Every structure is written in structure tokens, then in C-alpha cells.
Amino acid sequence: MQIKTLEHTSFHTILDCFLTAFENYFVEMPKDPDYFRQRWQGTGVDFANSYGMFDGELLVGFVLQAIGPSRGVLTAYNAGTGVIPAYRGKKIVQALYAQAIADLKPSDVKLLLLEVIIENKKAIKAYQNVGFSICADYPCFSGVLQAQATKPLSLQAISFDQLKETMLRYNNLYAWDNQYHRVVDMPYRCFGYIQQENLVAYVVLNTESGYIAQIECTAVHLWQSFLLAIQQLVPEVKMNNVNAKQKEKIQQITLAGLQQPIVQYELEMWLHKPTKNL
Image (cartoon, rainbow, N blue to C red; front, side, top):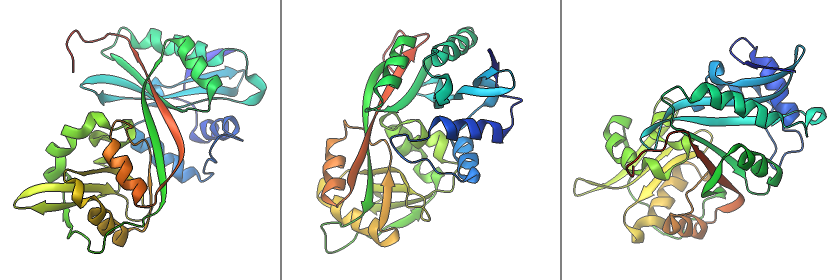
């Protein structure tokens, strides 16, 4: 078997391997190729920095990586890792990461990140054997909003340029896919509640799918009215990877009726750790 980058591997070959690797996964994967085109583009997957294990011409395992800023340093983010069932137990993930790390160490990349569902014990152990450690908990939420308020806030559409400074201030609380640099070029709309020229609450969401990339409210007593305003835009929503440290936010979205189907861990590995706190 041989490890090669995926730069010259067709999209459909990678997708077929991905879907085979994720059959009977903890959550059902979409089958629409366009979903993955958009998903990997939005995540910033760089196939020249992604790796595949090949048995002859057959792609049997992969690590998809995106390279970009996170936590103030250049970061390699794992956008998906999988091995098809017939080739599991051969330490393919460890071999792929050994190659990836060897290639990344001479570069300016300082940090490696990934997320994994907490029930996926085998994957967590494999990543820990590579050198990753758990650094954050990310519950995920979905459902129909049933905000506990009678009057919604009056939201106004705002641009990413207007919101940039605020989003960057919260950026490190969000997982890779929901950070400013990833969502700014995606089909999201931004809405905010402004009181006496101050931005009190904002949401970044896809009004077609109901996916919320970022949501913040600085006034606790306004949360339910804020969620009621969002409910009138998109009643059914989904939020992936809400930072468990944001206990007030989790309490408020749970009060508004959202369910928590899964929790993910974020894992990190520093190739070159900064000497000062970020």
C-alpha cells in the first residue's frame, strides 16, 4: 500500500471512499455529491495537503485537511478521516498522520485540530495514539424553536463587514467551520439587534437550511425574545459544535426547545506551541 496526496484524485473517488467509510456511522451522512462539494469548499479542504492510502488504484483510507488561521496561528484542520471496513485494524490513520505531520512540521503550521463524536471510542483512541488530546466539548443542537417569549426583538440585516470585529472577538469560542474566516464567503445572512447604537445580539444563519453558524446575545433577559425573532425567520434550526463553556447560551437554546442529539470532542495537537498565551 502507498500513501499519496489527494491532489490528483477525482472528487468522486474520494466521495465514494468517504461514504463507504461512514456507512453505519453514528449519524447518517448525506448522499448528495453537491452537499460535499459545498461542505468541503466551505471548510477549505486542500486536497494537496490531504492524504490517501492506496492499495494499487483503490483508495482505502483518507485524511482530508484544510489549512488556515485558528486561535491566532496557522492551523491544519481535519475535515474528515475514514478507512473502508475491509482495511480497518491496519493502523492506516496512524500512517496517514505520520506522513501529514512529517510534511507539516517544516511549514508554518503550528496547530492540528479535529472533532469526533464522543461515542466513537476507537477513533478517539487512534487520534490519541497519534498525539492528539481532548481540549473542548461541543454539544450539537437541532429542532423547532419554541422560544419562551411573547414579543420578538426587532432584528435588522447587517453585513459581514459590519459584524467582522464582533465575530472575531468571539472567534475562539467557535469550532473551525463556524469561525469568521470560514463563514464569510458562504451563503449565510447576518441579523442583529441594535440598542442605542450598540450591537446587543447577532446571528449568522442560512435561511434556507436553518443552520446557525454563530449566535450571541449579551443581555440574558433578551435571549428568548431574540430566539423568537429567529423563530419567525427559520422555525427549524440546527447548531453544530456549541462550546460547552457557553453555559448561558446552552441553557437558553435548551429552554427554547432545541434537542441535543450528539456531543463532539475537539482534539488538538501542537506542532510548535506558542510561548505566550493567545
